[in-house]
Amino acid sequence: MSEIQPENWRRYHLTEAIASTATRQVLWRLRLRPMALFYQFGILAGLAILFVAGGIVWLIIPVALIIALGIVLQVWLAGRAASRNFHRSSVLQAEFEVAWSDEAYFARSEFGQTRIPWTNFFGWLDVTGMLLIYTQPGVHLILPDAAFSDAERQAIIDHLIAAGVTPVPKRRREFR
Image (cartoon, rainbow, N blue to C red; front, side, top):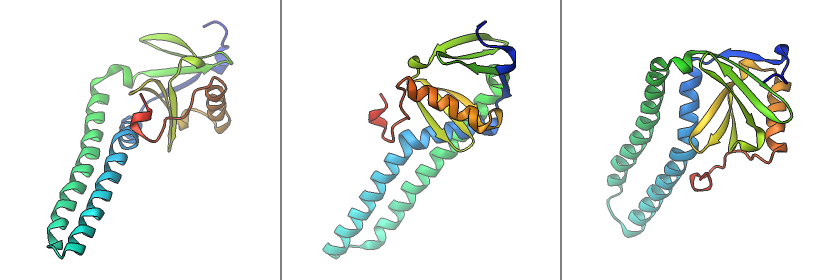
């Protein structure tokens, strides 16, 4: 890692809020949003069928509420699990240092160091407050916005794009 000068390293700590938000974003984007759209379509189709057939429309309301409650409960439980995992993990609570060059992304902490060529990344996701860089489906690095200037953040995204790494798709089946 000698090719990176010390002044180019950026230090940061993850917070519980950032880790929890990252988990919720990934869960919503890859699992719950497609499911929610599917259920919304099903509810509307069911309402249309009941209306046309002259059925009992009031039955669809409890079903819709149960489905909505299930989606909200999954998001809430994912946030709680992320919070619990954050408090149990000394790695997530450690101070991170990251840097990058035209060829690779570098990271180090008290637990070790790594050099990952840009072409080895799987995908990236630009969300409010952070940039998630995937090393494989379901495994991502969290880069909080507070640790980087807008120009540095854009430089990381530009390196990913130049290496042919694409943003994470909106549908789960494309992300395999």
